Length: 253
Image (cartoon, rainbow, N blue to C red; front, side):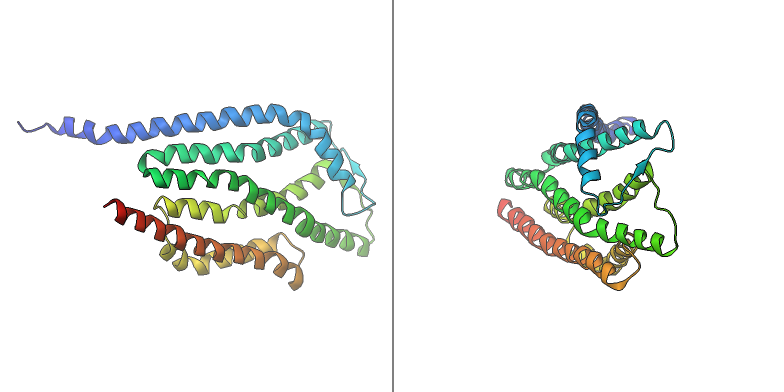
């Protein structure tokens, strides 16, 4: 007996609705962990604030509050950053759990190893951006302020917005190798796609390097070159991961 069009449509949409339901569940788990981290981040905000002020790249840093909401807003910003960092491994685990049914047993074990590396690479990027990029950018702006004869009066929100706007984008870019490796291992990316996108990727990374550093060639190179090396390293990892995936598929076949 021939099936009706309506029954065919139901059969076709069931897998999609199942995936959407699973994705929604994973997103809810991530939001719960992020919310718990946000509550914990409120307790870590003050120590982190004290450390960053004490370790500022200048001895003449005097922060001021220009609004009654500055202190509250800063507390929430620190709590958000702390929660974001702590939630990275859990988010990667939820992503792995979402795609796990489509992976073979060997692929499941292999990709699960990438979860802790997501946090490690983020911390490496955070260290590089804080101890290399941020001091260059801040000292350049301070020098320009002195040259123009302006009083250095910094608002606390403006100072930490400047800090986080440098730290977070660069730290996230350091996640590129592990993301590319993961997507290549599950078959979404392959080296051919990355090689075709090389010119665009290089342009974007160089643009980011120029935007977050002072306008001089040495500073631009100190940031842009590591980012370009990260991309090329990602291409190399993609090549290795994709080759292993193809080999595993052939062995299973």
